[in-house]
Image (cartoon, rainbow, N blue to C red; front, side, top):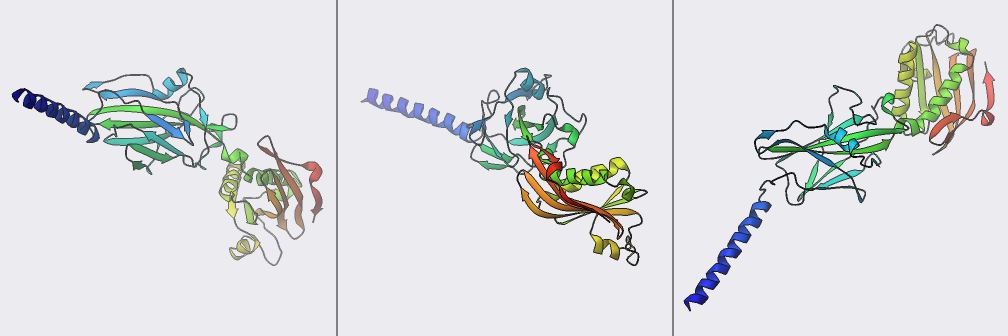
Length: 315
């Protein structure tokens, strides 16, 4: 009887120890080393690297995690902006996590040295899984585009108590400015600026009237036009004839814009790879030019189709 009792007590003690260990993990006990995580987007596993910052009281000097990613020749997966990225910590949810979004060169260096990274604030949790969104960035300067793509590097800094490590992933997104239909309008604008250049002699302002443009990417068009104006010494105004007249830019009696021109678009058709628009450059009632322009996108690049442009007029 005593032997049986001792046997059952041993079993109970073993079960209690096992339950205690399991409970330690679920209660947030830190890992002995950075855990093997899983990172996925749209069902695709993303390669990652990890580096120690502080662990078991020791501070680590190491290679930059982005450089490590490139040196290991991991594949850079293409993702669409707006895609959700999910990280599974597999039983070791960190006490704290920060996610930083960086623009990289094609060797892993930061594109803008010294620039503050963008911190991802919208992070959601479900158990041990963390999700954030690959956010759209319409403010990205055009010089960071490499072969039509922007390389985005994410640092995921995790802490468990006093231990800290840093995971890193690198993805690429298509340049929204280069492929956007706003480029179609911009190419038409450049065509207009090359025609009857005397109309823009001694001007200070270029006014953009896009109220009849069908594009949903007006912010990108504004950015393209703003960059052009800065480079060429003009000031961009977002207004039409009526608004400019009310503000005193246009002499209503003489139908004359002494210090500027108006660029306007009135679309006939806008498709994913084709724009047909009635565009004009106007300075006065007797100083204007326009046509029905066709712009097309080929291999991701917009250009004016000279052969399809029709009905040019000059006043």
